[in-house]
Image 1 (cartoon, rainbow, N blue to C red):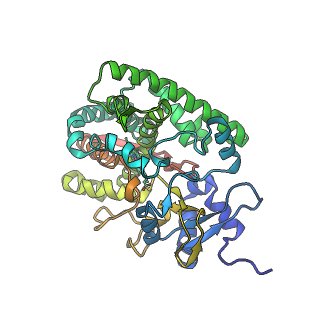
Image 2: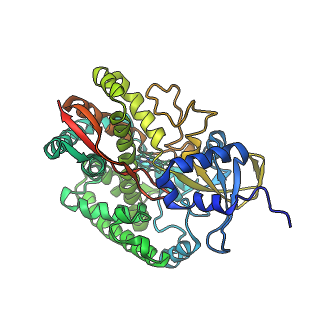
Image 3: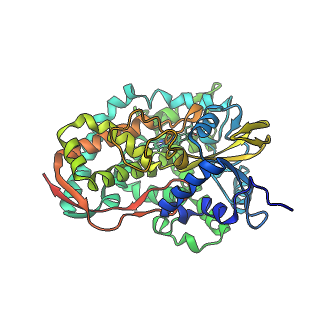
Length: 431
Ligand code: HEM
């Protein structure tokens, strides 16, 4: 029987689902370049039947945009929204009755999704965020003070890009600083579980079942923690997003406990490693290009472009999955209702049809309509916050440092989902 030309060769398929390939980056981008050209919508099937459900990999910008915006045609709920092995999905079903360990905005479709999204949508708009800008600036100053104290050689991820967005998210969720290390560990177990350094638990050596058990434990700890917090915010509401969630009603009823915990968890997890990765990427770009550093130090109007380009260039959320609601043709392929699809943001954000010289960090890129925040009904709820956090941090950094240069090898996390630098050694010269 002739090989099916729409099915990716095993070596390529393995690369697409291999967390280590995402740590290699350049090799992965080369693969995506070839796929966009030759098979922009290609089927990924497991070498060993039953390992994971086959899916369509979508690599072109236009196709990822079309799927993202068609929320009736491509659903988030029927199958997992993040690539998962079958064993993990089965364990999750057994443990929680759901494909996903956590039910949250990203796994809801209409008509439930808009009702839940509406609850916090206004809170995350720039007008409201202005209220917390000075708090965030204080935090940025404290983070940079500490970095300078520890310098001149520091790991920027460990000292700045990691802790700063975590503290912002914890602050809006009302989690006190002393509980942060625990929250960070739980987040990494949920999102960075494929990287042994990040999870700190040696998860790489565990069986998939052991990993999911560890993750299920992390979810339970999150749920208990936030149930307690919600009770406090019901008794004494403040202006934070935790109070909004604790006191919210949908169709006249308070949120069920699992949904409420899911809401906290999605904000706690989605807002942390993502912004860390784009922040680290922005700094890497500046450290690698002293002229650019000098330009933006002298002219802060360039900062918005740097922030936006860093988000595209790093594409911290590397993919999401969708399930086709009906038979449809896309990229010349016949997709069947129920087919699982990977919309790959890394590939889309490096599509030369949309971005000139996409691997280049171009702070002046215009337009820069990247897909790092997704598009359509699920587009990142925290995008204004992420941009604001980054802008404020770099305003402070540019005031406080005279120069910055690489001081060692930058290393990327091994993760197919949220990825980016896990280490960025730098030498900083205070201003
Ligand atoms: C959803 C990326 C920061 C909260 C998403 C999605 C992406 C994304 C790709 C899915 C979009 C889609 O399906 O179309 C990023 C990136 C960030 C970032 C790259 C940083 C650079 C944040 C922050 C928060 C946040 C700071 C909140 C504190 C959320 C939530 C969702 C989401 C709640 C689910 C929205 C929904 O399903 O309706 N994000 N995000 N994100 N993000 Fe972000």
